[in-house]
Image (cartoon, rainbow, N blue to C red):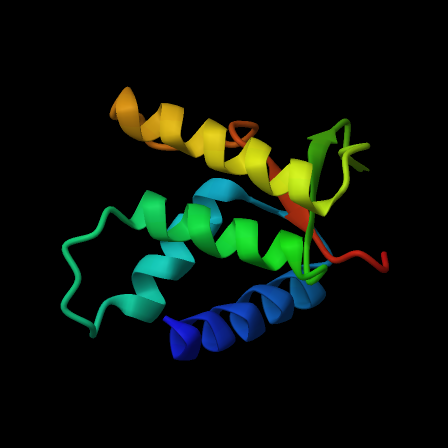
Length: 113
C-alpha cells in the first residue's frame, strides 16, 4: 500500500491545489478506487479510503473539517483524534452499508490554506 499511498497523496494534493477546494470523503473513495483498480483487491474501497485519510491526517498532509457556506472549517482536534474520528465514522458507514455523501465523515483540505 505504500506505493499506492504515495500515488494517492500526490493525486489528492494535486486535486485540491487545482480546484482550490477541499474534497469530501466520498471523492477520496473514488480516488482510491481509480488508483488501486489495477490491483487485485477485494477490500472495500471505503475501508481503504478510511485508512488513507487517517494516515494523511496523522502525517499532516491533510486536515479534516466541515465545509459550510463555501467555507472550510477545520476540526479543532489534533491529528490523532481527528484520524480516530474518521476511522469511527467510516466504520459506521461500512457497518450500515452506506456510501458516503457530501458532508458525511469529513472534508479534507491542505493544512496551509
